[in-house]
Image 1: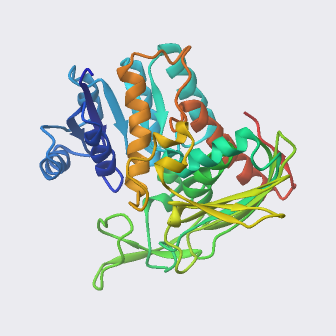
Image 2 (image 1 turned 90 degrees about the vertical axis):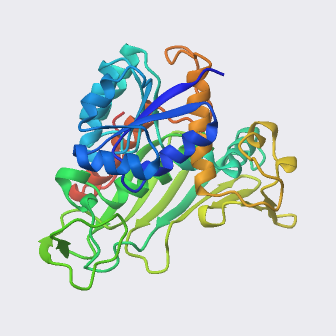
Length: 388
């Protein structure tokens, strides 16, 4: 298989996971890192064993050794960096959200389509083998026609007023925090496994901690406040808690809650699908198990084991039964789908992408959904139709 050169813009919390994932593929060379300054890029490159560093993303994009660019910058840089990569004719892998709003996301989607580059968004939970098994079982009719889809995505990393992140600043993170950051994952996962699209939403949002203590210096993502850290009080204008009712184009109904202030919940993503003859439930923190519910027979738990999975899902499982696979393995599965597509010379204008591979179309739809939820919550007008 031909070798592919990869470059990454930004290497904060998730950047090293991108690098680890592509290195595990065996045919991708991590060429360089671009940071917010020449010094920060050089330090990250040395730390991660990457040969080149660049003072700007423009310089990285111009490097002829780089064929694919990964954008792991804060949200407000997603649009300009993604667009610059597309215009340079290079393939792009962007963290979600695709952009700060639906209009920017639409422009990126359309630009990528015109240019003909491969474009991906990292909705990484698609890469779990039991998520793919769940999708196949629903598609095959194992639980009948789905009529109710529900769940949550709960975290506690913003529970204290000393907890802080750029994601709480609208000019850097966008108009939404909890819905945009983790709610978008739940919506993508739900639509992916069910094959149905969310068409209408009714949302309630709240800001549990309206004033926070912002550090005056730098702080690593998810890190607790230091004992002697200098801070300033700031007003928070984005939500950290939300509940949303949803309607699907299939006629199904649903509801989910998201929170960044739920003590004891670290990365608690749950999706359950109720159908005419059965139910399926997947819990990210117990991701090697798929619960199967029945009315007239005993419930079951399908444990991740390649020999027990349908063939299309089996290729996402890389260890025998009893050997646990994790978040990083699912993330690598996403990269395997994306880079396999590139290595095979597939054409995004005509060739369908593999299941774990979310495109800019999916990223655009996620931006549309979050926008509709915010409109519903802030207008107080009830149900809002999602404008795709």
